[in-house]
Length: 428
Ligand SMILES: *[C@@H]1O[C@H](CO)[C@@H](O)[C@H](O)[C@H]1NC(C)=O
Ligand SMILES: *[C@@H]1O[C@H](CO)[C@@H](O)[C@H](O)[C@H]1NC(C)=O
Ligand SMILES: *[C@@H]1O[C@H](CO)[C@@H](O)[C@H](O)[C@H]1NC(C)=O
Ligand SMILES: *[C@@H]1O[C@H](CO)[C@@H](O)[C@H](O)[C@H]1NC(C)=O
Ligand SMILES: *[C@@H]1O[C@H](CO)[C@@H](O)[C@H](O)[C@H]1NC(C)=O
Image 1: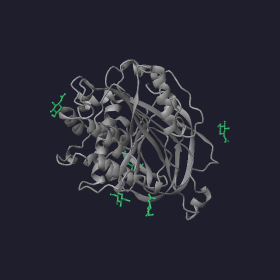
Image 2: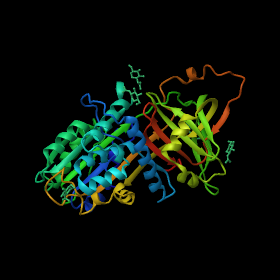
Image 3: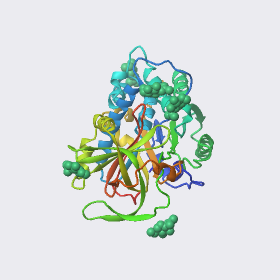
Image 4: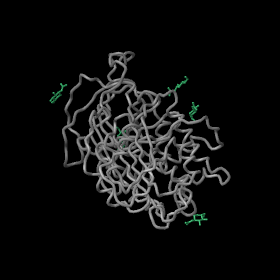
């Protein structure tokens, strides 16, 4: 993994510890720059932008398709837990779109599924849509997402003024000049900058640097979701979780009883449950029937299906039992995206002339790291939420004791913020 553990401390961690993992990255960095994506998107509300004709819902849908494709790519490599932030990844590549031209630009557009939103006479449309989407999601300062993005550039490396302006306007990002020849000084400078930007949450972003770095983009974000209805904090239930026919682990289960939105996808052989966070964000859980192998579901997940589940949810009284879990996952997207048609940006034929007229620039690495902790926490007293339930009717049981999928999305825009799969809740 290329980021130290410190990049994404537990949501409430006090003193993240550095690790040696950063070293691996920098050895691999030759030319171009490395993107360290950590958590989610990095757009910050800037100026009141005009609403373009394409809407943020169009963008959300396109992003979701990209997310599902990426999910399938990741799941084809292993059968472990998965967790990533599609919006973060799309947003970072939206910044790269502004840097690219020619074939590289076309590949990115196609790979990100954004071709239909590109307007030849409106090069700023896509970044503007990302900006608006982010404004919508974080309106009223409701969804808590601490984010930062920074670009570190070798001082000998000439960045186009227009790109610098755009990245400032749409992504609220500064370009910092660094003398990468002074490795120790650069590391200190970058870590200090990130520490400051993340208000001390990330103290040791990097622990080493390679020799030929020209440009480095660092993006951090923290999402803190509190359940609308907290799980009962007094339930301390240890129960089996059936990973497959042969493997069972003991996990800490959380329990809550209330009215929930759920549905059954009979053709898929799975049940869907919505667990609302506060502030217009929800987790959608997809639980395959006992007899259904989750790998079958992997192939069936699409943006269209997701939206149909959301549309068909119905209110039902339920007792929900689910495991506590924490996921911390890293992905080398430069290994995944070429298979999805985005190859040239990582190759010697990368066309990043809008970023710099200096030739030979390419993206060496794209690392995405995401962390989530799912526990009982909510802010409304548990007792209050039970009100309204008729005491004599027994609730149906929704027991999550086998591999499941989850999607965290913004309800107004259907924007997919996170996506994951839990095979073994005892593993990160
Ligand atoms: C990048 O793409 C533009 C537009 O297609 C083209 O004019 C330019 O020559 C390309 N530059 C490189 C270095 O490939
Ligand atoms: C919960 O149960 C575990 C063992 O089952 C125990 O070690 C732990 O102390 C309990 N926690 C609380 C808060 O009761
Ligand atoms: C899945 O289980 C539900 C009951 O929980 C049942 O109604 C449905 O028919 C099952 N589907 C399949 C394909 O087994
Ligand atoms: C944001 O504020 C508006 C008006 O103040 C309110 O209608 C809306 O529900 C709020 N959105 C969220 C997600 O809380
Ligand atoms: C956010 O987007 C949704 C869906 O397009 C829209 O209904 C809502 O009015 C938007 N909210 C704001 C504050 O722009």
